Structures are given as structure tokens and as C-alpha cells.
Image 1 (spheres, rainbow, N blue to C red):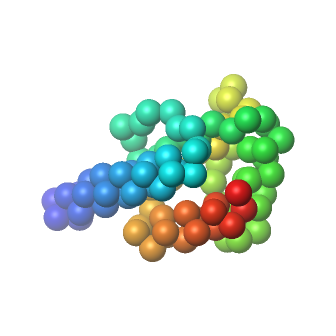
Image 2 (cartoon, helix red, strand yellow; image 1 turned 30 degrees about the vertical axis):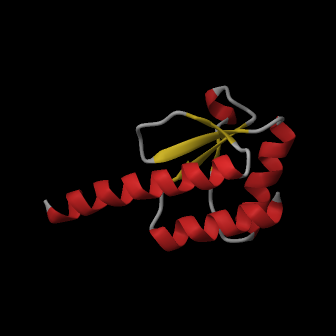
Amino acid sequence: MEFLLKSIENNKTGMAYLKKELNQLGVMQIPSATNFIATVWESEEKANNLVQELLENGIIVRSLKDFGWPNCIRISIGLPEENQQFIACIKEIL
């Protein structure tokens, strides 16, 4: 039970952190109550380029093209240090 409660708390704080940071960068997001954030980009090409550049930096995100949203990316909530690494990397890319 302790692990479950820690996981829920980590997800809440991670979601709040990522939403705040992405908002500051002007990144559009689809509202979520899950363990991931879906971000919306201006084009499929931009989304694909971001997926590739993040992967080259050791960060795995998922394109939502197969779900009918070719210009969207799914970002899972990670541990605090993983979330910080993602934000630092996306700031460099953008």
C-alpha cells in the first residue's frame, strides 16, 4: 500500500511540475488525469522531429500518430530527476 501511495503522490507532483514547465514554454497540452501528458505540436513533422531528438538524448516519448493524432506526443510522468531531465532537454531542443 505504501508503494501505491508513493506512486500516486509522485504522479501528482510530476504532473504539476511538467504542466507548469510546459506551459511556460508555450506547449499546448490535452488535459489528463492519467500518468502521462499529451502535447500538441504545430505539425506531424515537428512532433516526429521532437520524438527523434529526445530519443537521441536518451528520453523515450511516444508519438500518438497511431491513435489518429499525428501532431501529438505522449510524455509519461517519471521520477523527479527524469522529469527535470526531460524539461532541460526540451528547452534545448525548442
